[in-house]
Structure formats: structure tokens, C-alpha cells
Length: 213
Ligand SMILES: C[S@@+](CC[C@H](N)C(=O)[O-])C[C@H]1O[C@@H](n2cnc3c(N)ncnc32)[C@H](O)[C@@H]1O
Image (cartoon, rainbow, N blue to C red):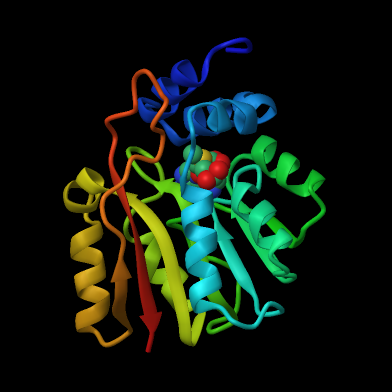
């Protein structure tokens, strides 16, 4: 798909039939992803970086970027002085771009939704942007992401407004709250994460913050 516009790539990743196809699409998109997403006004990394500034005061604390992609969030966090950034993604191509930034202390190829080989309570915060969306990371991945977050740490992430209800996220977060594992802190108003995309400008999302108990 080399030479395709951001809309062709977005169309592809939202309709990938298998995990293998989704990985191949992101591997293929990695080289132009940053410029493509910037071109459609991609807002998530700025929103999430602002929330990290609000909830993670210690800049040497471990911040785990779930679905790090090319490192668009880490790029901003590093400028703000965060020095212990860890990331996972299932696309080697995207991870290679993140690695090239030289701002992550650790990057691993991992699939969200499968067990994570990180110690319980080892992260001060989980951040995630654009990953918990149609056909991407599943709601049950938050069991593991909650496990690796330390008590008092934060889960700071985006989920599309329709996906939140229709793909089990509302249910999963209710369950984690009922079990006494996390508590809600704040949810942003609805916003458009890709406002200049000809096909996806109407897509809406919210950023959510929960605290690990
Ligand atoms: C739209 S990109 C977002 C990347 C980055 N967080 C950003 O905001 O620019 C989605 C990323 O999630 C990754 N991804 C999707 N589903 C995943 C899963 N189940 N496990 C790990 N990575 C996943 C893709 O490989 C891709 O890099």
C-alpha cells in the first residue's frame, strides 16, 4: 500500500480480518505513519501527554506505553522530561520507528490481550492512544495492564465512544472497579481525534483516567 493516503491506511486497519493482517498493515504504514497522522490533526498524543503531566509528577517513574506504535506519545513525554518510558506493540515495523527515537528504555514485541511478562505493580502509569479501537486491542487486555500498575498509579488512555460501549470496555472497567482494583478519576469531554481526515473526521473519542487501588 506504499503511496496510499492516511485514509487508505485507516480504512485498511479498521477492516483488517485477522491479527496477522493488522500487523502487516502497520508494518507497511510505519514509514509514513507520523506524517500521515500529523496531516489529519491527530490529537491523542497531546491529550494523553497533558494527562500524564497532571497525574505522574515524578518524571523518572516507569510509564508503560501500551501499543506504542512509532512513539508519538513518548516523543512528547520525553520533551517534558519523562525518562523511564517502556513500550510494547505487536508490529515490528512500528516498534522499529519507536526504537529509532532513542527515548524508550525498553521496547518489546507483545500482543495486548495476552499475558504480559512485566512484574505486577511495576509501572507508575499505563498510557495508550489509538489502540483500543475497532478491531485492535481487546477490553480484556486491561486485566494485565491493571496488574502491572502499582497501587496509586494511573491508567491513562483513549477509547472511541462507540467502541467503549459496543466492544466491552464499559463492562470491563465496571468490573475492575467493582472488584476494587481501580477507581475512576476523570473522563474528558468527547473530541475528534482526527479532525482533518476526509473519512474519519466524524469519529469521536474520550480519554479516560483511572487510579489503581
Ligand atoms: C493507531 S496506532 C497508535 C500508535 C500510537 N499509540 C499512536 O497513538 O500513534 C495503533 C497501534 O496499536 C498496535 N496494536 C493494535 N492492536 C494491538 C494489540 N492487540 N497488541 C499490541 N499492539 C496492538 C498497532 O500495531 C499499532 O502500532
